[in-house]
Length: 266
Image (cartoon, rainbow, N blue to C red):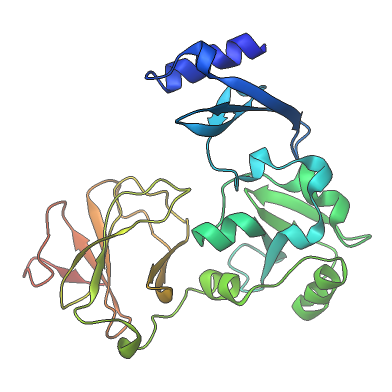
């Protein structure tokens, strides 16, 4: 893809702009050894184009736009899952640190080709799905944790809390009335605070990727970490009670009132 092709794609993505307004400022290889071209525009700002995929990214914290030469083990948080939910092997989750610190959840990207050179020497580690690795050569979670720390990877209490299911903060940490967290965020963003009510926190599951973790905060305080489950697709709601931490499942697409008798407790 040429620079001219990239500019044409940018004009199609941002129709209020013109080709001559876009300036290419640099190009480099990302962690996957794919070429990234960087463009700037007076009003849009900086935009990244992944040449191989023809993909446009505006978030500089996305892993796809990080330079391969800049990456190091300390750029990644890790979490070790020893629950056995994913089979007999330990599971290691990795997330790009800068992305997690801003967005508070995992990024759905494959990391093995970019990070395997940083793995502890001799470790058999195979990526089973985005950012999740199965370890077949060791069964001691504490020893595995030490290996990753010694290799330069970073641990994170926030990631540990997220991957362990999260806990609501005490009621006194949340201003009254309690806060609704509602919306239909894509998998790479956090929902924003929309409205308030005295009873609980609502998350609309429509459009949200199943098995993706979302962290909801108010004034910097962790309210609740939610791992949506697919209850049948769009139009289903998951409600998290701030006061008790109990979860309620709503089967319906228009239940705006948390006191509605149609609610079914889960």
